Length: 207
Image (tube, rainbow, N blue to C red):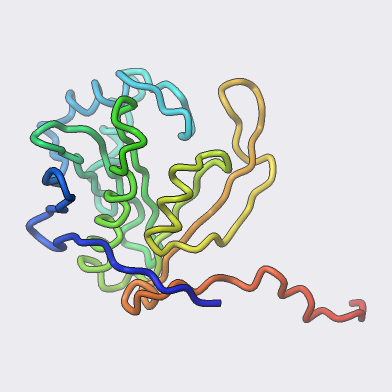
């Protein structure tokens, strides 16, 4: 099955800008001089749909020291709105043909569409800058409705559903869902989705 989508209005490549109807959103490459500001950003908010709801400063410094935000196959960008740094996009496994990403927006600005605009931008950036990349993947918790809507609107298709796979801070375990976009879908503007009923090819015979 194929769905048609309209590409977002963004400017790819070196200028690193994305224009919305109201403000200009820029994406600034993280550098080592930003380390302490990133520590404050990560430790100064809560992240309910990430691996840990709370990140302490020591852990944040360890992540930076390990090269998770600026390494051989990792890059990070500040999301800047009207001159204020409001979020971070982290790209991972950029040397692979299927990179992953992590997206964080300050809590007071969530629900305003910044995540979807950042997803549109990072998709275009990765496919433009890295010729070997054929698909981009992302995973979130099943109840992260805002992110799942962003995936859908940006041309990502649901490819996986993991039952009881995401431990939550309240002690429960939630389902996780995986999404991906293919380079060929991004180029064509069409979203091709998996056949979730392909087990019918088994027929009635046994092994």
